[in-house]
Picture 1 (tube, helix red, strand yellow):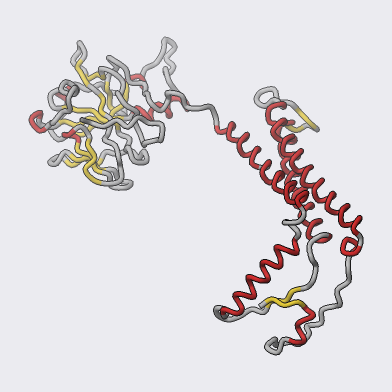
Picture 2 (cartoon, helix red, strand yellow):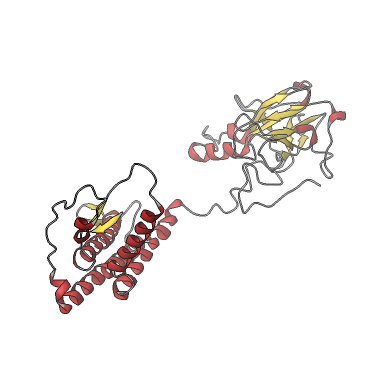
Amino acid sequence: MSVDKHELSTTETDPIADPGLPEHEPRPTDVDDRAEKRAERQVASLFGLSTVFTLLFCVSYFVFKVGHHPSVIWGFGASNVALGLCLGLALLCIGIGTIQWARKLMADHEIVEYRHPAASSEEDRRAALEALALGSEESGIARRPLIRNSLLGAVAALGLPAIIALRDLGPLPGDKLTRTVWKKGMRVVQDVDGTPIKPADMEIGQLVNAEPALFFETNDHGEPVIEGVKLQTEKAKAAVIMVKMQPDDIKPAKGRENWGVDGILCYSKICTHVGCPISLWEQQTHHLLCPCHQSTFDLADNGRVIFGPAARHLPQLPLAVDAEGYLVATSDFTEPVGPSFWERDNYELK
């Protein structure tokens, strides 16, 4: 229960009649209207300054150069100095303004609240709500629109740096999520040593982890065609598995009748749930299990999901045989690989 100190001596249930609080002394803003208005303008000015520093943060983000030849201030990167200084000052002004508001304009009568070992009674709860309403009234937020509006403006402006900083997450992916390096005529090779694969090399029930031959190719100087971060990025999207089963067990969808070779089918290795690599293969049922969340795909039925949280079938890579008898892709995947994302087309097998 919350009570004013003047009521303490008359409250019989209180354990202490008077805890020794000094007599309340009025502040200049309590007795002088001009001092009150001056304090109100000070608080609003601090909130306004916060908005100005927030806008300067946004300007600094675009004005100062970063990268190989950055702008410099005091020997440091100008962008970092300006962004940190502006955002820090914006938050500091809000903090100082709030303290100034509380010290000079909000009611400063002492309130004592006794703690209870269990849930309060209905009477105490009503008293608590009354105290909350009293606090809102004494803060003056309803009758001081200048402070209220400047504070709301300063806090709202703080959202701008967050929006501006989203640009640093990098450029939009474009079509990078919908394509891989697979293309017509590219050989499917072992993922460990790059050995090309012939249909006769595989046995019924076998699963092979594979990759595009491009990852093992070199230029005229003996250097890898793709290397570094780009290589790892493309590997993450282009990894595949090949399985061989009895041709009579396969139920190809319309238009996919020629996507396999002698019972050999090729699918993306990336689960369509959250992108885990999968290769847990059950030969008898033709099921592929993801070890992360147990999504299960039927590879004899176009990679259809038969269990688990995955909502989309595994993308299939169409196969053929080149002039030398090696397995090759006839195109890239006809749909995006990997986990679902909200812009992704809702491709469904018919």
